[in-house]
Image 1 (cartoon, rainbow, N blue to C red):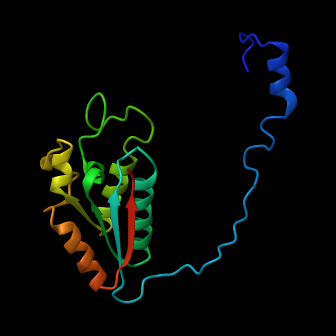
Image 2 (image 1 turned 60 degrees about the vertical axis):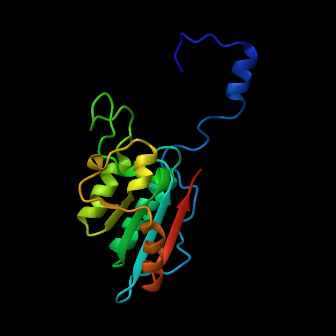
Amino acid sequence: MTDTVELSDIEKQSLTEIPHPSLPEGSTIYGSTKVFPDYKAEDGETYFTLVHGIAHESSVSFVAVLQATRALRKGFETAIYFYGPGSLNCLATRGFPTTGNSAFPGEHNINNQLKTFIAEGGKVYCCRFGLSLHGAREEDLIEGVIPTHPLDVQDALIHYARKGAIINSTYQL
């Protein structure tokens, strides 16, 4: 705390009532026991994620991409399908004051993770109608993102279900 901040006696009392931080940095406060086996894909297994969440409005979209990346690295044929407002996650034009510049730490987390996912062999689909609802242009998609017709959302779900895919569907309002 700086010396320039004037605190009342009651503020000082409240501040010192419980020592902060109560544990030094690096303290273990959670166990590390993994309960379930570390599954790897069996021959031909597929993992499919649907994302209907807006970038940076919650962690839903980013966590879905991280989970899909983990499934890909476990050997699953893996695809992510962004639709509705989720389509905005696929824009390469994110940035301020210019594209590619991060106005805040983590602004490009989703962009970078999607690029990694694609580079490692994952497929990313993006609904053209979802883009159009928000005035986003198809030419602004991250390189390697596959644009899809609005009717493809349901058929993609059927396609991956018939393949026996593990389906992770995320949704955010």
